[in-house]
Image 1: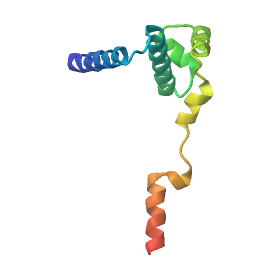
Image 2: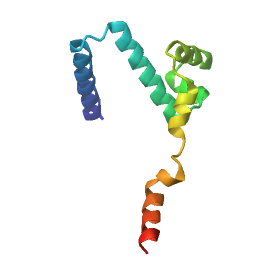
Image 3: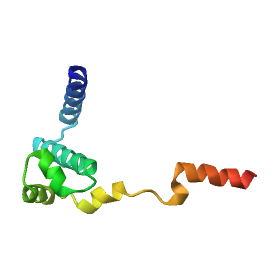
Image 4: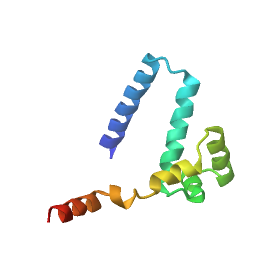
Length: 102
């Protein structure tokens, strides 16, 4: 478990170095980190704000306010959860090609 933590820290250190060297301002870096972190937790809970807020240790209204301040829309999270159209799914595409050949 400590090895994974060390890997994550190394990746974060690298990301911070890249952001600093490319001139990203501190406020923008913090904002983007918060936005991505909240987005990830919301994706894990399939857009359920109550469960996400519980994991984050905050009230649901606080999460909702943070999302608003970071311009993170729940619709944006939910679109990532939707399945692709049937024609774009890998298995379906392979089956369709098989039927065309046969």
